[in-house]
Length: 462
Image (cartoon, rainbow, N blue to C red; front, side, top):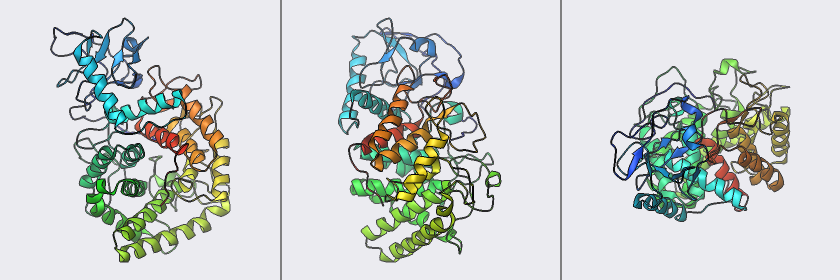
């Protein structure tokens, strides 16, 4: 994903590690430094106040490691770095300080309240770190940001929906409900969302147009929570009605939605077929309509179930007519470029289809870079030597949910091998195998958790 300009964060992650404003007898404050904002290898959490964190300075993080199952950082000199309760900045404490034990116990308790997926110790370590990082990226009001650094420090409905899904499959239902509740509160009256929001719920007006795929992902994530723990999703029905009604009204006579930006965040005019929507829009909206129809049936609203189900059937026929003959490319044209959006038609978003599965495998093979990760697309306009971890994780999830366990394990192993020195999953990996963008990235964390869960438990499909 291509993220935009910086904005303020409300009482949460602020900047690279700075000195605490007030010295305390129990700990020394850290010196100021000013590395490029995204270069931190991970976040540091605190005691009993999981919604405040700060980025670990790369120099301070050298030789450091999180205390197992926590967001408390053990430093190379034997000291510990954490954010004390009620503060916004990290302090260095002795390892036997009671605040350290309290912070570790709080993180352990939260993890124990759900499940940590993974078949190996490495996978479980990666999953626990991803879960804790998603927890740190989610504010008390449910605002779940893409990451902590300025240009990523916003709520994209798409990314937030995946974080809610990751919390759902691991049993953290209240956290999932909080995120979806935030999205419900900021939804526009016409059912749409803006491209992104600040953590206090204000839409960012920077010229970006609505990204319609967000509607589909929010509907799917809400359905997943409802299917897993209905009591946590009861007050989300009005949001579902507004979003699904909007999607069904948007469909044209040919069964396709209007053209729109998708997770690429670029103008539709730049696509190979600028007059039609991309698979990055169509796939999520199809899943969302199916999910909404299921939700309506479960609530006894047969009128809406029929209307949304009919719209989903029209769109499914349009996908078969427009995209399938060309092997499910990004734009529905002969010789159209393949990209990671082919996975949006695969499990766990749709039932298994051998034609889709073949297209997903072909796209994964074509997009794979020498460093082992993938580019987002054959027509990616950015750096062609940097692998993107969200797209790599998309192929991992499609493989796991489609029963191709060995392939999923291979993708997951690559992700595990290319975490930062603190075990966080970065957005991008360069041709030398190094972190080349912000870490952690919430979307990659969520997709990794969903993949590891899928390798042991089947995620239901709308």
